Image 1: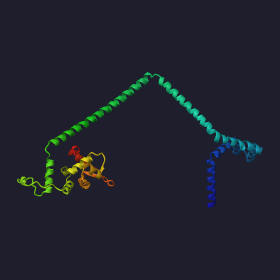
Image 2: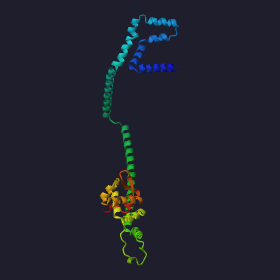
Image 3: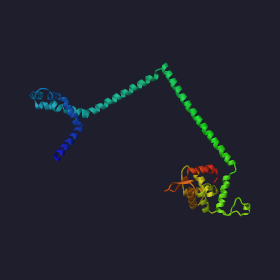
Image 4: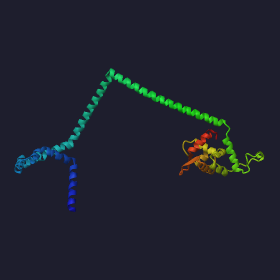
Amino acid sequence: METLKDIWSSLIANVNERTSNPFTFAFVFSWIGWNYKFFLYIFDNETAATRIWNIAALYPDAFAAFMGGGFLYPFLTTCFFVFLWPFIAKRIISFYRARQIEISNAVKSKEEKRLVNQDEQTAMVRRHEKERAADAEELGNLRARVEQIREALQKAETELGTLKSQPSSTASNVLTRTLSDFDENYDPDSATKQHIDTPALPSRQEILSAIAENPNLALESKEAKAILRYLSSKPASGNSDEIAQMTQVNLSVTRRFLDELKKAKLVNKTDERFDKWGLSTFGRDFVVINNLDSLPG
């Protein structure tokens, strides 16, 4: 059984190889064309003897049949279609395409010279009016949108000016909380607070801890403000070395401040591999609200 399968597979492979050959395919069709009478006799309704006699009469001489429709004529026809016809077809197609281009150019030339009739002119005017109306409507919508944005911007500027003109209770509260964190004896409500000596400036570590607990305390630190100002001026993130160099802050101090500003959710590390930092969404709002992006360095 396996042997029969192998023989059948080999036979199918050989048939596919032969039929995929363009010469073989063309020769088969050429032979069928030259010997169509043979197939008419084969499928005739006559008796088998009559069909055999007719086929024998069709090929009385074997050599003549071989040199005629049996082999030579189909072979010459196959050679013509395989080797000569592609060059002839190339010339025919080139000529046909050239004539098509000439006809198309002539038609376009005549159409350009043709006058527009009344109906076509009316249709063109209507189409132009529709397009103009659509453009005017779109322009009106855009102008209304611009006006809304302008009003919103003016409102925001007015609110910002009001906040700047009012006494900043927030800054006073921040300063009070800062002094309270670093001096347990400080009492803002005490009548004797003016007799208390000004507390010593807090250390960097104390400032960092305070910033982590309250982001507004970044306003009290020169280094933190410098880092936030620099990051707000960059469209992309920067690494700690670049930040330290541009803000003129020691690298180790810069890294400590960046860590604490990260805890306060003011900055984010955008790239762990290259140690790149950038402002968070909250950090950008913080910089704008506190006007850090316009302060001098």
